[in-house]
Structure formats: C-alpha cells, structure tokens
Amino acid sequence: MVMFHFDRGLKLTQIDLGIDVCRRLPRGFISHAHADHLAPHELAFGTPATLRFYNHRLGAKRRISPLNFGETKEWGELSLTVWPAGHILGSAMLRADDGKQSLLYTGDFKLKPSLTPEAAELPKADVLVMECTFGQPQYRWPKRELIVEQLIERIHRLHAEHFQPIIHAYVLGKAQELTAILSRAGLRVIQHPLIYQYSQMYESLGCHLGSFEEFQDAGDCDGAVVLVPPRSQSSARLVLPRAKRIAVTGWASDGHARRRYGVDYAFALSDHADFDELLECVERVEPKQVLCMHGQPSFVDELKQRGVDAKWLS
Image (cartoon, rainbow, N blue to C red; front, side, top):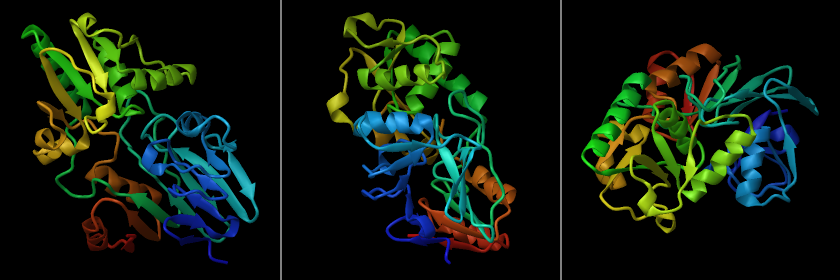
C-alpha cells in the first residue's frame, strides 16, 4: 500500500492523517502552532507545547493527542516519531515508517541553535518532504552572534539619540526568542499584550525568557525596547512618540525589507533554515528522494545538479 499521497496537502494514506493541512480534517498532525499550519481538526496531534498554543488560538475544548519528542506511536502498520525542528518552541518533524519505507516531514525548521526552541534533530529517512522557504543562494545568514551584536548596538544608539526602539515580530516564536536575546543583553523588554500571553505560556512550559513586562502605558517606555506584532496586524498597533521601527526577519537579506515591512531598520535574524542549512538537511537525512514545498522551485534544480532525486510540490 502507498504510504503517503497529496490531497491539497500531505497525507499518510494508511491512517488518513493530514500533515499541516490547513483545512478541517478528521485527523491532523500540526508541526507547530503558527496560523498558516493550523486547522480546527476533529482530532489534532502535536507536541504538548504545540497543542497548548493550538488550543489558545482555536479554543481550549478541541480534541488533542500529544506526541512527545523521541517517543514512537504505533498506528496500524505505521510507526510515528516526532523530532525537534528548531523553529519555535515545540516545533516538530514527523517521521513515519511502515517497515518497508520511511518518510520524514520537516515542516518549518532551523538547524543552527538558538535560545528558545529545542535543538533540531535529523533522523535518516528514505523520503524527505522539506520546506525550502529560503532555498536560494542569496539567503545565507551571517553569523548569529554578529546579527545580535548589530541589533543591540542599534538599540543602544537609538536610546542615546532619544528614540524609542520598537521591534516588530511574530507574537509566537520570534518575539520570545528576541525577548531572551534582549533580556540577556541587560535591556528592559516591554511586550504588546498579544505577545505577553504567549510569553507567559513559554514560561509555564519551562522555557524561561528572562525579564519582561506587559505594555501598560506609552509614557513608561523610556530606556526600554518594545516588542509588537508585525505591522500587517494593524489592529494590534501601539502608538509611541519618537519611535524607530525594526524588523527582524530572514527577508532582510533581500535589501528591500525596510520598504516591504515599513520599518527604519531590518536585521536578518531568522527562525528558518538558510540555503546552506537546507543542503545540510538533505546530506544528513540521506534520502532516496526529496520532495520540496514552499520557497522557489529553483531549489529542486540545485539538488538535481548535486545528484539528488528531487521534485517540486506546488
């Protein structure tokens, strides 16, 4: 029997389990709790952290089934195991094995270590289904320590010039990583209430971010860094005097990020794998076939030139 097929998303055929399918299904695996990977499934599978965020987003009465990292669940003829993806707290790769063939689905992932997500692990698999958002050679991140150093330096300079630094970040994942970075640097961190909710959940899940506060008043932000949702989330905006806005995203490598995000500064601090990490993933998993999702189809051509059997999934 065929292990998997595609029906407006990846499905494990034998158990009819959708994987990051963004429409309601009887059963769905959720690699992580960003909105573009969620749907109100009748029964949702994921790591305990992911399901905590999932319930927060979609309602606490949803039916869920937690999967712990490294534990194997036997389901019919399949063995299912989740492995850390290094993207945000609780993010997971899913490996399925029927004894004849194995498949690894990465979801969004990052191999280089950071402060808040679990460090990524890559098991071997016959088929690798991977996201390749930044699968072009221009997306090679500078050393993380250098980016962080430049970000902290810019914040101190803005404070010295009596400007209010505001950093736009996803409310789940990026904002908590930034909080840990800024807090370690001795900076006062104030969070938009939407971000603060998730940060409290991080703390309750044992991921400590350092010192941070919930935004209360625009007059009480002197000497602080204020974390707010992306500018596209207009309903969540905060108006602060003498503000200078900062975006922290892998797309900062484009050179057009400031205009794209409507900010004054942009730093290439990403929670996704860059071009070299994507290639490293393929090398470490040693698959017989690679199926690529998201990003640009040109990454498939790159893999083919390296002798990899690769295909693009639209």
